[in-house]
Amino acid sequence: MNHSRILVVDDEPQLRRALKATLAALGFLVSDAATGERALEMLRSEKFDLMLLDINMPGLDGIETCRAVRAKSEMGIVMLTVRGRAEDKIRALDSGADGYVTKPFDVNELLARIRATLRRTPAPALGESRVFRPGGVEINFRDRQVTMCGHTARLTPKEAELLHYFVTNPNQVLPHERILQAVWGPDYGGEVEYLRVFVNQLRKKIESEPSRPLLLLTEPWLGYRFVLRDEDAPVRPE
Image (cartoon, rainbow, N blue to C red; front, side):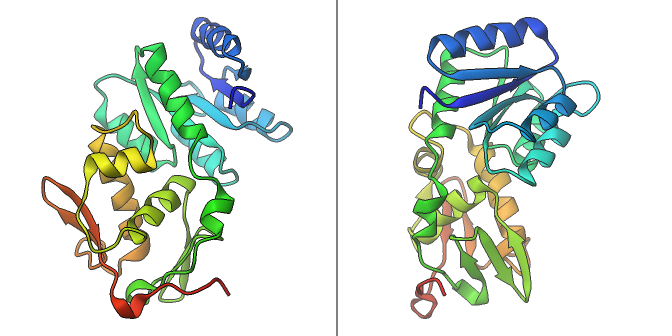
């Protein structure tokens, strides 16, 4: 993990220098960019494992940059947001980020988020899973796709990982903390807003009526439950 390549994208030179020095001292290979435009340019010629991306930048902001990256790449994305701006945090997750860290942040918290994102379930592990067809919806983890009523939607890496956890632990109440630690890592547990955003995204892709879900149910104050009937047993990929 310590040889992972990280791209730091922030318009504050002092913060970029501090992050580069800290991460490089831990063995990470670090590059930086001052703008979203420059970051996208670098990604066209270089490969990175993770991006630290500031949400508030002049020009192409972090949200637009995140969406552009996520449309073409499954690299890890951790966004840097301003403390107290709940709407920014929701927008960060909604745009495809794996998570966020609020400014000013503790270095240990940032490192925990970086390591958790780099440890996320790799594509081959999900690809070995079978195809699930709950309630007429086809979920193909190998291709990270969901097909419903003839329409196919792409899953982001974190959506796929979360949905995989739900369908492989069906018909039981899964507490918020348990889900967060299983999908995001042991350093998580209280970030319920993560689940709200990602569950909302998943419902748009797997439920015919997202506001009246039949598959991915909310258990008030506790967590979530994924409904899988006996006749919806998984099958091998075709």
